[in-house]
Amino acid sequence: MSKPIGFFTSTMPNDGSYLDELQQQYGSTFEQLGKIEKLLLLHGVVQNLLNAEVNVSGTNAALEALSTVSPIVQGLHKRVKIGEHLGLAEALINQLKYQR
Image 1 (cartoon, one colour):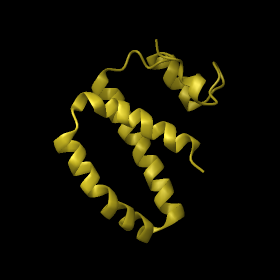
Image 2 (tube, rainbow, N blue to C red):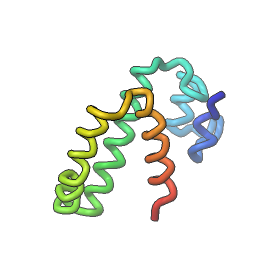
Image 3 (cartoon, rainbow, N blue to C red):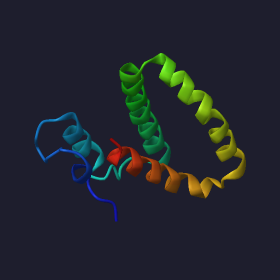
């Protein structure tokens, strides 16, 4: 069973935030969104995080990181089963969450 969005964020029921509005519209676990919609939402969240990090770290750091990660991404595409990708995403999210 999925935990509500408020478990992972500072959102509280009826706090008037945008996340609260989304919970009211799509459910506290976004259960009214389909898999493709959730993946697109995750893509947008990750893009926002990436843009913020590039703004802090700079374009040169981002280009260096891209040269490191590009072959890894190609290898994932070719050599890792799609069923492993969500678990990998979860692992990366947890590592990012606690990284300083």
